[in-house]
Length: 617
Image 1 (cartoon, rainbow, N blue to C red):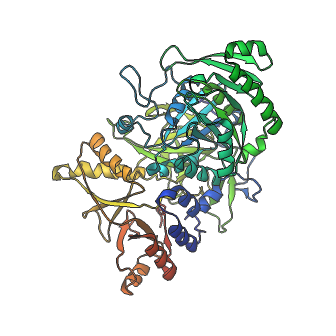
Image 2 (cartoon, rainbow, N blue to C red):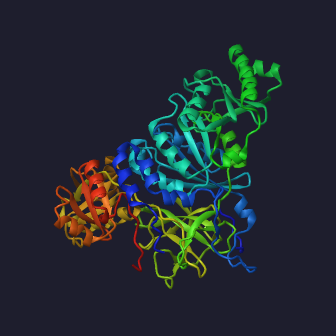
Image 3 (tube, helix red, strand yellow):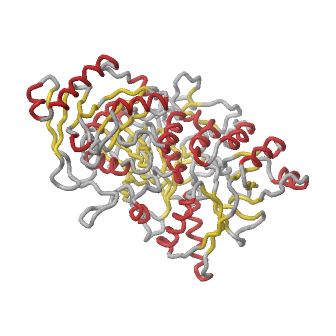
């Protein structure tokens, strides 16, 4: 539980429309993460660490702090987002971190047998049935005096948007690699987002209990493909059936493991100083592995050294490298301990003062005296019995206190919202809290007005962090309920799922809700998840009718510009629809048509992404 203590506008559009058009032409379905990161360059720029940047504090601090967080609470916070290609073992690693962090008595299995418990992070039935993560999950626990917030993200490319949002809330990232496969396509895409965010990156090479690539080969892949140097912290001793343990190069201690006797339990470990050669040789009981360990140690010390440059780690220029096996629990606790020592605490973030007339960027530090936070995810039906809606808020500064009133970045200045209660999150489980601090991720009840990217704040100055844009959809389909009697439940279910950002909604122009509903998504699997959740959570059947369009562009110049282009015959073969805020959207069948229109009819101001509008506009 979080320790209780009494201490306590429109967003600037600086993006070039030429950039939007160019990127929409160049990138395709298989580079969606990179496209998003590039088109949202302003968002990335505002959220990366403030290394070498000239910015100034958003507010002048005063001697009387009204809601300032205690330094000790800020300093003990650590959060991380875990990214990987599907099937690299991400959810298993998360479970084992929870196990060794004391948050679980027994780790769950992604595909459990009868006697095994399910995982804490994959709690939706469709996740359990398919054995994949389809939604980011937040889990927090206390360990060794630190408060740890883990954001477990989906690995499947159809859900990259959810991963991108989670990375917006993170201060550290963990790249998980399957040691037998090395770098994989989705890992590469998500790494680009991590790099543009300038997050410290920790690399964990998993599945060493199976035949694996040489550790040197993995290091070469990371450096050659990512232009990123790695520093081995934990070095493996063998692989597959001969995986004995790891060498902690920071402490010069060898950790030799024995598989846990109970399923889901902790591994037994023996610690031996690297200089105790006689004991090491006896315990390893493999002359080849023993000789290679000594050879590797000498080579690494000579080529890389034994001291890690933590400034380069914090800047995202050097990745600490770890090896282990989550399935057998080898090296997981060591990784957790090292992360708590090396991971960065909650960082200062750039924001905009919506009351200011200038476009200058301002900083909000965790020590700022007022509460600030932003919504990076919304979720419906964590408790299906109550049909609840929750907004996930990353606290940036100040202290959340139960019952506090906050301003909302898209609402009028005079409008305040009462945060009657907040909840600490642990997968689908929740517990009420009275206080939360910078770095924490909390759940607050969403009355329907909080959207992804919104900023909440206290004080008289209207602060807004850069919004989190939606991915450009590439799959489109009409959805309807075959049973007229289910229309009310169907409508309610779709409204709540759309609020989550699971998919986007489009309609024909001037349709106020009575016409056909069109869904837009990044990948086909998102449609399947919507249908499955409608059935599971709302008991509603649905029918999908695919459309042959593959690209969407928002016409930011508005309907007058669209009408002009249409009257001039420029929109032949292009479908004109509106989003849920009745803004014009054009659907294309190919990238070439979209790029040509953007170049020839610049007045349309075509953009591949959108953000919720201000309420006051």
